Image 1 (cartoon, rainbow, N blue to C red):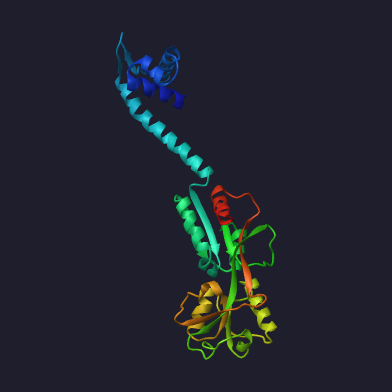
Image 2: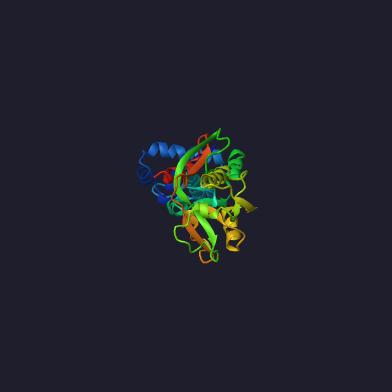
Length: 292
């Protein structure tokens, strides 16, 4: 069996065409080098070098071996480098899901920084509800999630605080309350609401209901939307009002008026979530970056 060490030694002799110079280049003595070349010839079953008193020449078999030996060693070096890059998380794929509002906070800058730090890692981004993200994590369809706790069942999952946000009232730009100074949540008691389904975002849905209840009313939900962009799009076409993350105030800002809330319970935390099992290096690199 020919090994890479033999090929490296053969290449040195073939390029130097001199055993002594090749031995010096390889930082070894000449006799073991000569022995290696003879064993290589025996294993191949062909003479690789013509040896004279002072001159060494390649035979046709030697020239053929030299050409392919260089390719083999280059490929071996690439394979070793690829393995090291994978072990260090410098190559591979990262599947990241997130609630819509997360990309309006620090997630966007975190993703940009990660791309610059690990340009050979393919990042697969997908917006999804908290419920769908948990399902994807449990089924192995996602590596990381940016979601809104609390979760109905957090067993087998690890949550880390990632970003902070607060809620805001979202009104159609033409709404009668859009220009009211000192707008409060109680002013919305008789307004139709657009809301997120409880089954897909339990934490957010319950937070909105609790805030409205504390303000003295139960919201009249006229329509639900499955993602925050959908909720806001319905507000923009005057379906109703909504309570949304204040970080999204730039979305359709000519059609929607946003009024941030500064009352107890209006602030919330987004979490970075992953399974409890050991993380692959690529995923761990993103987690480390997100925690800085």
